[in-house]
Structure formats: structure tokens, C-alpha cells
Amino acid sequence: MSKYITAYYSDEVDLLKGVKLIRSKGLEIADVLTPFPVHGLDSVMGMKRSRLSVVAFAGGAIGAISGFAFQTWVFTSAYPINFGGKPLFSVPSFIPVTFELTVLFAAFAMVIAFFITNKIGPGAKTVIHDERITDDRFLVVVKMDETKSDNALSILKEAGAQGITLKGE
Amino acid sequence: MYVSPIREPLIRGGKTYSQVTKDIMAPMAGKPSIYWYIGITISGIAALFGAWASYMTVYHGIGTWGLNKTIGWAWDITNFVWWVGIGHAGTFISAILLLFRQKWRTSINRSAEAMTLIAIACAGFFPTIHMGRLLLGFFILPYPNTRELWVNFNSPLLWDVFALTTYFLVSLVFWYVGLIPDIGTVRDKAKNKIRKAIYGFLSFGWTGSARHWSRHETVSLILAGLAAPLVLSVHTIVSFDFATSVIPGWHTTIFPPYFVSGAVFSGFAMVLTLLIVTRKALNLEDYITINHIESMNKIIILTGSIVGIAYLTEFFVAWYSGVEYEQYAFMNRAFGPYAWAYWIMMTCNVITPQLFWFKKIRTSVVATFIISIFVNIGMWFERFVIVVTSLHRDYLPSSWAMYKPTFVEVGLYIGTFGLFFTLFLLFIRVFPVIAIAEVKSVLKSSGDNKNDTHHE
Image 1 (cartoon, one colour):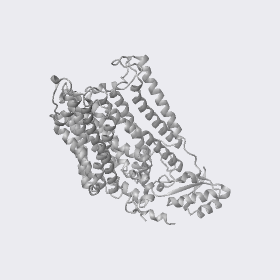
Image 2 (cartoon, one colour):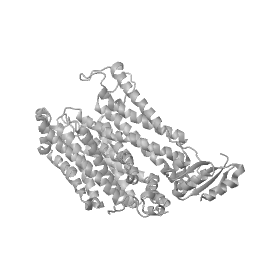
Image 3 (cartoon, one colour):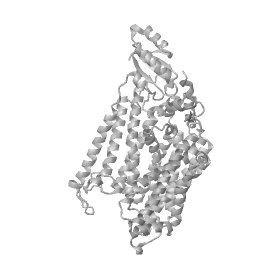
Image 4 (cartoon, helix red, strand yellow):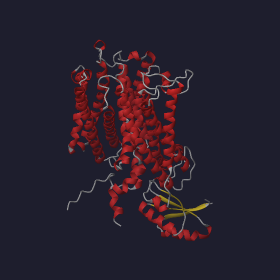
């Protein structure tokens, strides 16, 4: 993104209306930065549902299978010990550890995927467009098309956005 | 026509978004108050006392404790179960109440989760030091070794290792993922360069992008779905430590639900004890309102009543089973040499929470504070009764014995208190005690100023 415009709203209700208007006029919104999750913004921006739940399921499945398989291997082949006459392959005893590993793997797989897809992580360098977006501003970032710059500015103005500024080199 | 009264707002004082940021971050700014210094000095001394007791235990051995060959588990396992129980409220509040869409949890989940993490650390300390030879502590983990031995996956004590580790790690991740946007707020408000760099690092480069928020919501919801059964599993597995043995008074199937409700009961009591002080000290009365306290008190009545019924059921089943050892164990609890502990437990856990049926009492900050401390005491004695009275007189009368804690054991307990409060006091200086972003998201639909946007 070479050139872009940022403009902000101070209320999420105005933001939702504004975003709807901007999109209907054919302007492409690169991003919306908000201090908290605004409900309804997903559908207004036309975002797809996150597939992180699939990652969580896959992680959980790996945890469950490997946990159970490991315990089975340890007790039936690696070092079989008779504990008080219990069967070596005692499924009920394996359940607690299997369950815990399922949860552990699912949670970590999902959270790591969350960081990777968002491209955030310890010390990640990201552009902070406006220091008040983590406080009380709802910022809209609009991609700039050289030919239609005046048009974009007027649409943003019409959509009731404040502090419209041209950025980038 | 009946018109239901409008619900009290979750957040009072008609706050704007920037006011919310400012109010919640206020305790982190400037120099800490004199009370904070007094608090951290006292808790630091307590932690040092614990360090001394740990030194005595490790250097001289478990002989410095009051255990004997009959009572091999006593004070430390009581403390272990008590701290694990306290660690249940945080994830209960953030996971189960999130799944139930209880918006009032937004004001208390952050500090309750922090409390959970610290409490689990305190809990983990006890079984670890009980090993005596701390250097060999890693033996509890399954790892490839030259003896080609593995851990015993049939043992509930090993299940505990997995349950507590998973619980701690998942709670930590849940807490931190929730913290990231708020750390971003702290970063953007920071004036000092070093402070900005540190919080910038910790914020993982949070930008507040709508796409990130959307995924953040998904992650929170799924983590809540994962953490909810996890909370229930942890104390279930802790109760297996007892229930899978053959000691009269321990060997009962009621233990898992009974332990879980007891854990939530004591956890909420500890959250109340801490938050009543915190909201006053940090001027957060607009955020943690009487309604929050009342809601928590209602959960205390519910879980306290479940615990009360469990006590009665245990007694009934002991009689109904016809097993004389079981019957003796319960008669011995109520009327034997440790009857005083049993009746402290009964009074604190069964009678005092029932006072919350009166609206005047459950909406009174002072009464809630006092009762929450009673519940904390009662739940400690519950674990003491279960552990010690069941062991001290079992099948063989010739090995009956009594147990008394030593100075060192008491020191370990006080030490974990010191650790708990020291870390909590540091937490309130380092991170926002209330989830700023989450409070903002419930502000419009439930704050005082909701009418501003509804008339259009």
C-alpha cells in the first residue's frame, strides 16, 4: 500500500453507517481499526468467518491421538508393568491425560495460528496509524487510487468521517 | 400491564470511552500509594518467611513437618487443594460466564484470571515441596531416561501433573490473549520511551484491526469452550487423588462434583475478598458495582448449597452403605477429636453463605467481605477435615494417631500467602486490572449513557 487515506469516527454507530456508505460508493476499505470489537462490523465489511476453529480441532485431534497412543505404547510395549493386577491396556486410566493433552494442543495450536494469521507476535513491528485507536477512535483506512483521489475524499466527507488525512509516500 | 424495571447499568457514571481508559489505567500511573508499599512490605515479609520454611524443609527434610506414618498427607495437601480451588474462579468467570453471555463478567474477569494463575502457582508449590528432594522433581514428567522407565499413567497423582500444567498454561494463554489489546492501550498512552518500548514488545504489535478483532473474538470463544470443561476436569482429577484410594471417607463417587462446586465456591469467595479491597483502593467502584458483588454472591449461595448437600449426602451414604469403617469415619469426623474442625467447616460453609438469601446482606459490601472470609476459612477446614480426619483413624486402631502442624508447615502456608499478595500487588501496577476493551464493548448496551444512542 503506497498511498492511503485515514479518517476516524468517535462512535461505533457512526462508524458502521459510514463504512456501509463508503463501501456502497465503491471505495475499497483496507482496514478499520477500533478500540474494541464492534459487533456488526464483520458483515458490514464483508469479512469471511475465521477458520481458526478448524485449527483448534486439528490440534485437539493430534493431542488426543498422540496422548492416547503414547500411553498405550508405554504400558503395552515399552515397559509393561503390572499395577495391582489391572490390565496393561487400561483405557479408563488413559482418559484424564488424553483429555488434558487434547485441550492443551487445541488451545496452543489455535493461539499460535491466531498470531501467525494476524502477523503479530512478541516485538512485532506494526504501523500505528493513530495512537487513539486503542482509546476512543474508530479509524478507517482507505486505499488511494491516484486517478480518483478527489472522489475518495468527498465520499469520506459525505460518510461523516473526521480528520481525513492523506498518508504514505 | 406489568412493566419490568430497567436493569441497573453494568458500568456507572456515564463514562465515555476515553474516561474508561483513563480510570482503569489510573492505578498504573504515577507513584504507588503508601498503602501499596505497606501491602507489598507485609506480603514480602510473609514470602520470606515461606522461603525460610522451604529452606528448613529442603535442608533438614520432611521430618521438620508434623507428619507421621499414619498421617502422610496433612497440612500441605490441604493447602494444595485449597489453592487449586481458589484458582477455579478466574477461568470459571472468564470461560463459563462467557459461554453463558454474562456481560457483567467483563469487569472482574481480568483480575480473577490473574488470581487464578497466581493461585495455581501457589498450589503447585505444595506437592513439589512435599517430594522432599526437590532436585528429583522432574521425575514426575514422562521423559526418555537411561532406566527406560515411564511414569505411571494409572495414578491420579500423575493425572494431577497433567491437569494442573494444562490448566496453568491454558489459563495463561487465555489471560494473555485477552490482555494484548489492553497492553496496546497502555503502549499508546505511554509517554516515557522505555515504557513504550516494553509495552510495545508485550503488545505483540496490536493494531486494533477489525480482522484481528474478529479472530480475537473467535479465539476467545473457542478458548472459553475449551477452558470450561478444563476447569471442571481439574478439580475432578484432584478429587480422584482421594476418591480412587480405599480410605474410608475418601472412597466415594460424590467427590468430583462435590470438589468442583467447592472449588468455585471458595474461588468466588477469594475473588470477592480481593476485589472488595481492590475496587475501594483503586477507585473502581463505577466498574465493579454492587450488582457485580450481588451476582457473585448468588453464585456463592448456589455452590455453597451444593457443598452443603454434598456434606449431608456423604453422611447419609456412609450410614446407608452399611460399611462400618465408612460409618465410623463420619462419626469420627463429627464427634471425634477433630470435631472442632468439622464444625468450623459446617458453620462457615453451610450456614454463613445462606445469609446471602437476604438482599440487604448480599448487597452490603461489609457483610460480603466478612462472609467471604468465613467461606475461605471454611473451605480450608473442609480440606483439612477430608485429609486429616480420614487418615488419622483408618482400619487398624493400633496405628491411629493425631496430627499437629509444626512451625515450618505454617511458615510454608504463610509463605504462599506472601507470594500470592506480592504477585497480585505487582499485577495491579503492571497491567490494567479490568479488561478495558471488554468494558468498552459493553458500555453502550449497558452503561449509564445507553440512552444516547438508542433514540435516533
